[in-house]
Image (tube, rainbow, N blue to C red; front, side):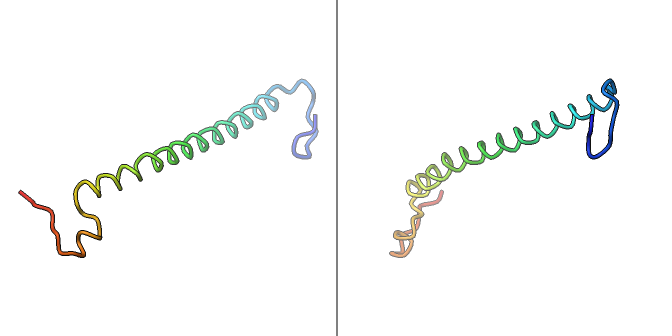
Length: 74
């Protein structure tokens, strides 16, 4: 078996298991990266419209502030 330019015996299980562990680790990093990217996308899609909605409901839109309107605070 030829790994990284070094010839190993076919029955060398340590090399085979190290190669398998390296492949699984790379796959795990890829999966974690994709899951985090999907989570960030979902958060942006949900939180951005929600923030705009709250901003409109609370009366802090720039149009109202330009006219001199201020929200009532307790």
